[in-house]
Image (cartoon, rainbow over the protein chains, first blue to last red):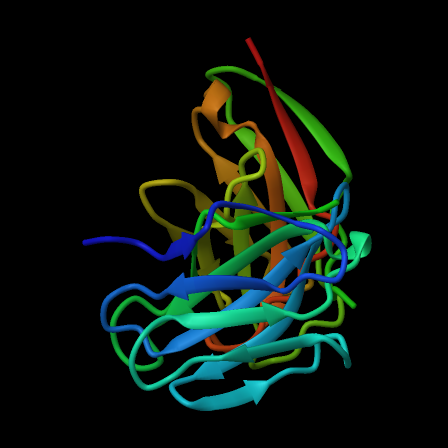
Length: 115
Length: 110
């Protein structure tokens, strides 16, 4: 019974490059959430998705950031033209939506470093 | 903004009960109290939640005051592995986004 999986666990990018972070939710979970933790700061909500739909993106930066959760495959958080301030740990969480254990389960995170 | 207030840090001796307080004086009638923890750079881990009754599971107990304006998370026999930042959160439902505050950094002393 695998938990939430994120890859890569560590990602290094140079300024201006693109970063793609992947999240595979727990089996049977149809809701995915992305959170960001800047160095020495707390966790901040970014976006909430269900299959093929963005439910709440109130925490997403207006530019360069996008997220998707396609019908098939993992959820993707995409950061275009990365800057040093994007260096952070990005955590994905999933929940079943209905039934099951009513809770969000977090993955191990992706540590993004922008050089 | 987080709707909860927690002490920034606490110490607890190994083997003793750790009691972590949380104030949520503006909690609404339909909001639950949730507790998560984050062990050094790992993903947050769900601990327990409750509405108005006290709750207990294999990890902890949650005591909610009758007026629901505060609560206490109890780790009955703290171990070094319980060293973490503990977050108290209020939200309507499990599918709600989580608004994390600063939490309480719990140090377990050997």
